[in-house]
Image (cartoon, rainbow, N blue to C red):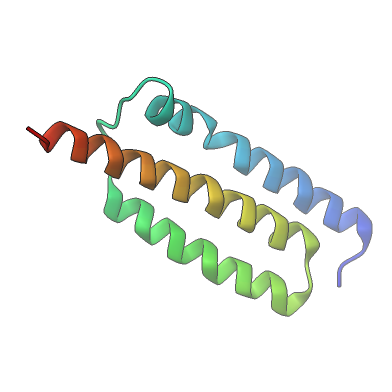
Length: 92
């Protein structure tokens, strides 16, 4: 496990990475907009996050574990929102 100073840098990076998804989350859930959101891209990002999470677990990095769990939750919320909006558009 890395020193707490190094983990603090990772936690800050993870926090900023989580915040970066905020506008997309707001666009989907508050504004009801999903244009320009690619579900295949989000699926690939989710797989990458799972792999980073596994890596974080293997190297025992608290920062990587927390950042990837929270980011995956946000990505899943975006995907669910987009699917919900697209289904609603197709419904009669």
